[in-house]
Image 1 (tube, helix red, strand yellow):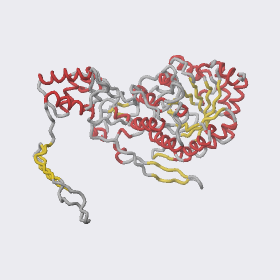
Image 2 (spheres, one colour):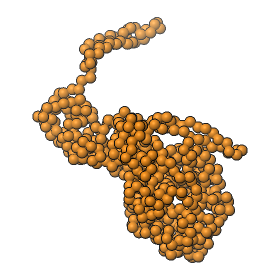
Image 3 (cartoon, rainbow, N blue to C red):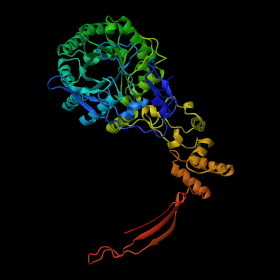
Image 4 (cartoon, rainbow, N blue to C red):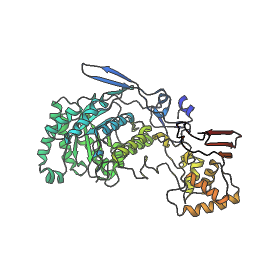
Length: 541
């Protein structure tokens, strides 16, 4: 474990997340309360490459450069179809496409642009900006993101790939390409179903026809000038693996660079899905020339587990959404995948290519603000117990847990809230302590002392009994004001900051009818005496 001067100055204990010692995140100990997240203020440099084209370079602030929380791990140079470092996992965010397909989650073009910029700040590799053929507004939103966010280059050289989704027909593909081609790194993602139930009842096509359609779709995208083409065999999780070998072989030969394997209905168990990825990599001709990807739905609550199983089997692109939003039960959650790889990627993924020490270049400190933006814009709230970003994810009510957290936060938290951008500070005893009916003596007495109340043993015992009696009936835990009110009610003890020692009130008769202002010059006077000896007086009109 290595500490930089900057991290030592901040009092951070760092947990190295990969074999690259320059990249680390704070997981085991909290950031000091005095450290406040600096607002991202970027300076922009405009570059002109060819007439009519320009790009912007975004720079971090000096404060962010000095903090290890804001250091983004270097990523391999982007090349469609290959990754120079076999341990690197690309994060493909589809919040703006699949996430928006959640019922009631419609986003405006300006909202999509805001989220896309936040995703770039987070550092995702690919942003699937939408389904351009779906509507004129969706096309405009994808094009705007491609033209703007797709040309905003960060000073470390990072610029996100901007992707548009299309069905496997020329009209869709052309529309998608027109929307994304203005980006520095444009991608077209085309798909067609390959499971028996989809081919026979939805598409009414034979397997041979499916192969022909898929091949022609990729060939057409390539003919338009697109050299980054993703192909998805929809419902691959319920498709015949032998048929998938044929389809994938054909699209690789046609020019596909990424093969995305969807568990469209959330049907697979992790060992099944990981096994499928391994089978496809081992039995598809030309598999070594493309990137395998996962796209897992959450119908059985296994989307994140299946995605990680796919990574363990050699998938090097994982598709996901912020807060796990998406159709039906949602998608694999970006924050869960990213933090699982940050914490476990260095040690628990040894079944695929490379050294098995997997990593991403996503900067987790932007997870919380990104999550909150998506909640605000979509109206899709997270359940309180949602992993990583739920309201309760870093809060503790059990007395046993609270006692452990007060003594050592590592007893019940495997990452710090600060590492995902949630700056806890001194609130809730600096340890997410929520006082309720399960709270123990240590947590309650600690909070009372922090509020300035010191009770002897007998008084505290009586107070604690009363606290428990009320907590049994109260919903939502005790706020500080309620705790103070209980102390006052029980003992008449006041945490006095100041007292009024004198007050004079003068009558005020209103406006002078002759236009001379107020009839009474002085409305009030006061004198205040505080605990630290400070005296003040004042008067006013």
